[in-house]
Length: 154
Image (cartoon, rainbow, N blue to C red; front, side):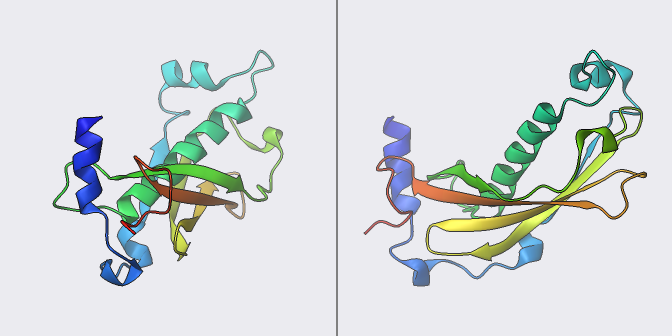
């Protein structure tokens, strides 16, 4: 807890005190090797041999949070003074039968909008048989880790 209090000093006084960021600063691509690693595939399969969509949602959520942390990174701090949580997952267009358990899944995403205390992250999920890639918009909020208020000192 003491370490979290020290991190409070890294928070900006206002939004004007934040460095400018671009969407490409938070861009990331991640490969989920379902096709190439059978031992990992087992963790993602249902008894009907389909992909467990809840597991994919967990991965999407974790990736959304990671993207936000990349976007808000303070290079002089070894850990973030922010707590970032998912506030909303908008519409994910797909049915669970469209994912093949025999093929790798590629996720890519970036921050596409930033407000005072929230960010929107756009994540795409791509598999060879998914045409076009599926979009998964997430809205996440950032809070000062101690006060659970907006992410500024004021």
